[in-house]
Each structure stands twice: as C-alpha cells, then as structure tokens.
Length: 563
Image (cartoon, rainbow, N blue to C red):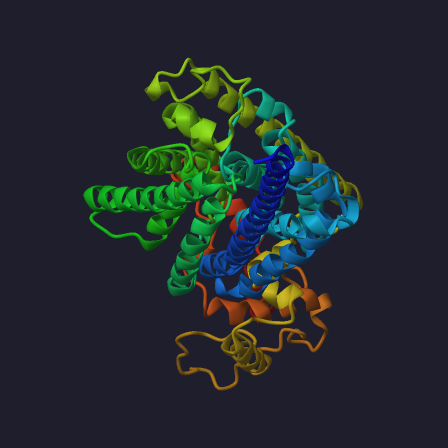
C-alpha cells in the first residue's frame, strides 16, 4: 500500500472518529435533556402535591377550631396562598438566590424562564411556612395583623433563612449546617413565629397575660383526620423532592427520604397510642394527629442522611419532645390553641439536632459533596467529632433569633398602635371572640343551621327578652313575668329607671347573637383556669365572669324587671 493510500485510510478513520464523537455528544446532550425533563416533571408533580398540603392544613385546622370560627380559619388559609404568591414573586425568590430550589442567580421578578420550575417548587414550601402561624392564632388575631405578618415572614424573613441555610454560599451552609427538607428552614421558622405571636396575644380584658389558657375542642374530628391523611401524602413529596442531585444516585436519596418520612411519622404516632393507652386507657385522636405531625417534622431535616432505623428513633424521640413541650406550655398557661409550637417549632429544632446525631458521613457526601467540611463531619453516633452537631445548634439559634425578632417587632408595633389609638389592631375584640369571628367579620357561619338558629332565637327574644328554660305558671295574673326591658313600671324609658346600668343596643345585639352561638358551644368554650383553688385564679375567674357581655345583660334585665 502506497503512502497516499495509507494517508487516505487514516483520513477516513479520522472522519469516522469525528462523526462518532459528534454522535456521542449528541446522544449525551439528548440524554441530559431527557434527564432534565424527567426531573422537571418530578419536581412539578411533587410541587403540586405539596401545594395540595394546604387543603390538608385547612381541613386539620377547620376541624380543630370551634364552629363559630370555621369560616375565619378557612379564609386565613386561603389568604396565605394569595399573600405568599405575591410576596414570594416580588421579594422572596430573588432574595433567596440558589437556595430556592436551585434557582440560577438572583432573579428579580422572575425574568429568567429557566427559573420558572424552581419558583413553583420553592413556592410550595413557602405556603407551608406561612400556614403554620394561622393555627396558632386561631380565634385570636385580626386579619390585617395576620396578613401583614405573612407578607414580611414570607418575603423577607423566610427568604433570608433560605439564603443562609440552602444557598451554596449561605453563611450557615458554609459553617456545616445541613437541613434536607426544612425541619429548621420551614418548620422552626413557622413554629417560632407562631410562638411569638400567641405569646403577645394575651388577654387584654382580664389583664392576666400568660395566666389563662382556653382549652379548645374542635368541632369536627373527621375533617381533621382527612386533613392529616392529605398532609401525610404531601409530606412524602415535600421531603423526597428536596433532592438537589439529578443523577442516578439522586433517585436513591429521594427513595430513602420517602421511606424515612413514613417510618418516622408512623413510629411517632404508634408511640403516642402506646403512651396514651398506658397512662389514660383511652385513644386520643387529636393527640395521635399531633404525634404523627411531630414525627414528620422531626425527620424532615435529616430524612436523606439517615438510615431507616435512625428514622424510627427520630420519630419516637420527636413524640417525646412534642409531649414534653406541649405540657410545659399548658403548665405555663400559654394559649397555643392547636399546639403549633410543640408540633412545628420544638420538634423542628429537635429535627436539626437529630441530624447531628444520626447523619452518616457518606450520605452527606452523596448529597452535598462539600470538600471544605472535615471528614468526620457526621453524626455523633457514627463517630462524628461534634462539628455537625455544633453547626446544627448554631443554625437553630440563628433561625430562632431572626424569626423571633421580626415577628416581635411587627406585632408589638400593632399592639402599641392598639394601645394608643384604641380599636382592634392586633387582637380581635371580646365581642367577636365570644360571638365568633364568622358572625362578626365573615357575614355569618359557614354552617347554615347556625344562621337559621340565630334568626329563630332572635325572634323568640323579641317576644320574650328573658326566657326561662323551665317556665312555671304565673301565680299572679296581674304581674307580667316578662316586662319590657326598655321601660320601667312608671312607663319611663329604661335609661331613667332605677337599679343598674341601662342596657345598650350593642349589648342587646351581642346577647342575641351569643344566644345563637351558645347552642353549639360546650363547657370548654369558657375560659379554663388551672389551679382554680388558688386565690389568684379564683379572683381572675370572678373578674373575667363579671365583665362578660352576657352577664351584664342578664344582671341589668333582672334589675329592671324587679323595678
């Protein structure tokens, strides 16, 4: 073969090699595009499922409040969605940077189409953070104050924490803190915000801050139970979709996160059932709900870094933390109607600590691969040096400090305005609290029967303003047992009659509406004082009862009837 032929053969082989390389590159690009598309669908479907958790929260909170506040709690949950949408779009997403589901750059007003999917996924997490607060201030906080807090919490505070913890250049991330799906970033943030909010919402009428607590009994346990099932399904998506690695190993991490989520929630609830059965001999459904949520919150921070047996230990210990903190709050007589802080705040912090105890070093490297961390940066029970546990504790302290400062400053501003100018800026007035927020602010109850009873009882009261539950025959026909409350015996208006303060139109209107709500209320709607035998509690009880609108009306009516 001549040299020319050899050169031609070499050229042909070179051309074929180049063609093969081009084909290989094209196949790799196509495979990468396909992989990106698959992960995009994965994130989108999970984001939709996480957004569906809002329905779970709505049903859980609806069943856990009293009938007369049902429409109010639903409205707050719905308002959270609108507030979070605009606040996250305008401020939060850009501020969070790549911590927001891997967004590229600080995309102000979402101008990069490549970040659309990251925005949707990160938005689904935002709504959860905001909704946690709604349960803690149920039946208490005014709507303007609640919405203002949601705007700041979502747009500024939460975005700042996401940047610190989940961004590659975040300060806490560089210190070694890890939070797989948000025990700290989502749940501690929401739980601490809830704690500060209900701590500020003290009873202004009795002047006894942190000394009384209203014992709530929800009006529909079935709704709460359905809500719990929706939350459980959404929680699996919440945790599994937090994988940032889109390679084949990421599938394994997502699967581990899902398995650990289920195991932790189940073990926490099983512990609650065993504990309640042994101590009280009963099966408490609301307690089982909260225990399940506590296990889910606790494992959220480390579900991708721990083994299944670690998830079970996390779930059991999360119930212990929840139970202890819940009882501590009750002992301190702090008003947390739905146990928002024990479920989300306390177990959220515990979830961060569990990462420092049970996280395996090789699993952390698979997920993050951060070379600047020491090789023994792992859980204490796997031979860690304690650097991971220290970073987790540091992260918990920073999150608590940032959130507590923001919520305290904002709500105390509302409270100072309320104190100086009067009105209801922070806490709803006592009339609305007794009557029900639905009747005062939302045009009637969500349940038609309550409005119907209201009308019927109002008409009855117009004929018989002071009805007796056990009427007896009138021994004196000349005596009217139901005198007109607006006039005395001499025909003069009640304002000039002797004996007691006059009845105002406002008091009569409040009593009419209270009567309708009373048919759906039970003894637990009254303020429950702990250690009622003590002088302080007895005095507080007497002072509170003497000043209710209901008692004022009855006293005045009785005095005017005798006159």
